[in-house]
Length: 124
Image 1 (cartoon, rainbow, N blue to C red):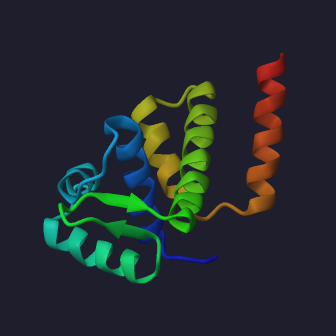
Image 2: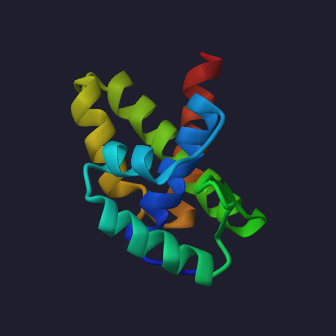
C-alpha cells in the first residue's frame, strides 16, 4: 500500500489529534502541519476518495481501518526514530524533525533492524 508522503503526514497528524484531543478537525490539522485550510480541504477530499478517512456532517474526521493502519505505521516509526535520535544526544526538536523526514523513506528491513536494536538497548 504505497501512498504519497504528504498523505502519510496528514494521516499521522490525524492519529495524533485523535490521541491528544479525542477528535479530529480540519482546522487542528492545518494548525499542526502549518498549512492553509484550503490545503487541508484538498487533502481530506483525496483521503476520503481513497478510503482513508470519513467525515461526518459536523466536519469531524474519522480514520478508516486502512487509514488507521497507515497512520499507526508512520507514527510508530516517528516515535521510535525520535527516541533513538534523542538517546544519541540529538536535541529533541531536531530529533523530531529528522524522524519526520526519515519515517517515510526507511525500508521495512532497516526499520525492523532498528526496532530490534532499540529492544536490545532497553533490555540493558
